[in-house]
Amino acid sequence: MMRPSLTRRDVLKLAGAAAAVPTIVPAKVLGKAAPSTRLRVGVIGTGGKAWGGAHNLHGAGQCDIVALADPNTPNMKRYATKFKVAANRCFSDFRKLLELKDVDAVLVATPDHWHVLCSKAAAEAGKHVYCEKPLSNTIAEGRALVNAINTAGVVFQHGTQLRSSIGSRRVCGLVRNGYIGKVTKVTIGSPPGHATGNHPAKPVPAGMDWDIWVGPTPKIDYRPIIPGGIPRRGLRGWYFVDQFSLAGWVAGYGVHDIDLAHWGLGLEDTGPVTIEGRGTFPKAGLFNTVLDYELTFTYADGRQIIMTDTSKNRHGVTFHAETGKEWLFCRGRMAASKRDMLRTKLKASDTQLYVSNQHEKNFADCIRKGDRKTITPIEVAHRSCSVCLLGGICLKLGRKLQWDPKTERFVNDDAANKMLAYPMRKPWSL
Image 1 (tube, helix red, strand yellow):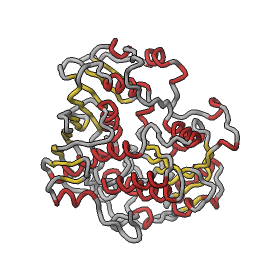
Image 2: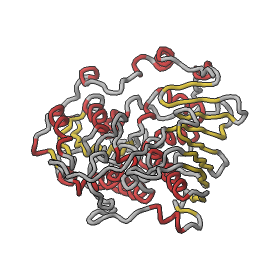
Image 3: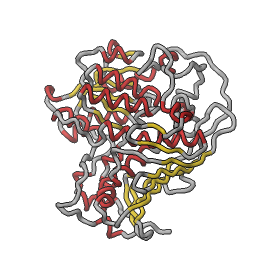
Image 4: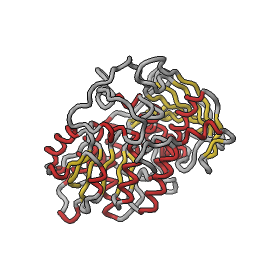
């Protein structure tokens, strides 16, 4: 079926050429900030995910990258060269970076199992925090980080950067203001997981502190595919080993889309009341997170978010009108059942969504302004991530669950509530 959508030219006409900010913006395009206004940022986790974020903070955010931390020390070499970071400011243990008094903020781009511990420690050290998605590995972790960020009073930004795209904001604004009528259903297509064979243990390579890399999770022998890439996939293996990513790709990728669904529906401060679904898990091999899946999240007012792998739904977020005829789609780009719908102009009296055209710049600007509310603040990040983690628990238990979004506990379900946290390996704790 043909899907009416806007071209890049259409988007530029709508938003103005100045709003079309590329993913990585060279500093020379935006001008240089005075030394007194430049923020000093430490990067925790220097694999592939941090590369774009560090460039964006340096360029669009007009920050200086001044310190690095990664237990896989060879990872830091290209960052140190690119951003001219001295060797004595590169650490295998992130706690050493947080001791630096001249670091204003951190970019946390570690594997999932380290997101909260690094971000929480940074906040407690008085550093502002940009944390990559998904926010947490468990719901208990996420709530602990919310409390830490609020107590410290630092600025927080979550790496669900699709909010900082023109298409996402426009579609969510149209939905929020009722321009396709009442929306009772959202469908999401998100990539499936991956399986692999058995991988024998190998000696830990030089420059790798494997004990710190494994961190709070149970001990496991080193296997190159875990911190390294999956051949021909370009993805790190840890995404699909549940001790490092408990919900697998449902949270690792799907949190982007759940976040947009919440934004459009105005459900950013709550969660579903029931979760049901099914999924297929690998029968053997190192990877053990879900492969294909279907999940239905029902909210207190009856609205539903239906999340599946992309074999069942288009990759992205589709808002369906109650009539069943009209729909709006976004995932950065946008589409609609009727093309002209996307050109609808919001009225002054309509709810106006937060405008950010560059995610890292928004973070840096909020720090400079003393404004703690970024486009994706901590509570919003926690609620979006929680939905994905609830889905992961549902898929593992294989049954319908009842959830209380106020208490953040399952209703009369001890087995499910035990999965809201996991015992951390000493010396790590929340």
